[in-house]
Image (cartoon, rainbow, N blue to C red; front, side):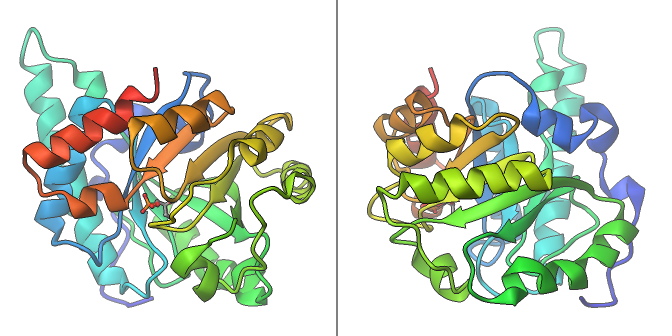
Length: 281
Ligand code: 1GP
């Protein structure tokens, strides 16, 4: 962690409005969409515009992070810009009789690649164990390095089991995952149950950013049958059809990242988001 960033509650203007991030993520509200913003892939102001476009269309969570070694100041700048944009939109909505202020009360949550990618301007963090990593760094060491900062920054933590499926992509490689093969439901059953028994509340099934094939429905079905876990699915979800398949298999959250990186902030982005969100209903 760098030393330039200091915790400051007022960096999280939305926080008091939406309450606990854990409560938001585990709420029984039907399937929802999370937008993943990789701070290394665009300037903070572009990230903020993309987040606004998504939230306007119904996205209920902004995840900030990625598998790359993004420095914390870049992560932080993105969190600040997204938070400010959401706050402005919420304020504008509160002053408009037809406005829907609650729509803009969406938490900004870290999806860290390691202890380096933290920011006090986030509302919370997916505090993850990469359960099928062969490298203890991703099982506990990065977490142990980052935890004091998470505590100091007063971030809400969401205890999360993160499991990487084939093809796995960059996160599978960097995280040295022993990839779960697309039909290995028994292995997912094991990770899901072990995660629940550790007290994890969220299980994130990851196919890898930009994956040719998203996580197969059988694996999602297996994970979602385990009591006490909210299931998040990401990697290779590019359209409403793929999202619908994940949701029908039991995904509580679907995550898309690449989709918005390929589109600009204009009509192409809006069309891509509309298509993905159409898969939720
Ligand atoms: C990656 O699951 C996320 O961690 C999102 O994947 O970039 O393929 O949407 P995509």
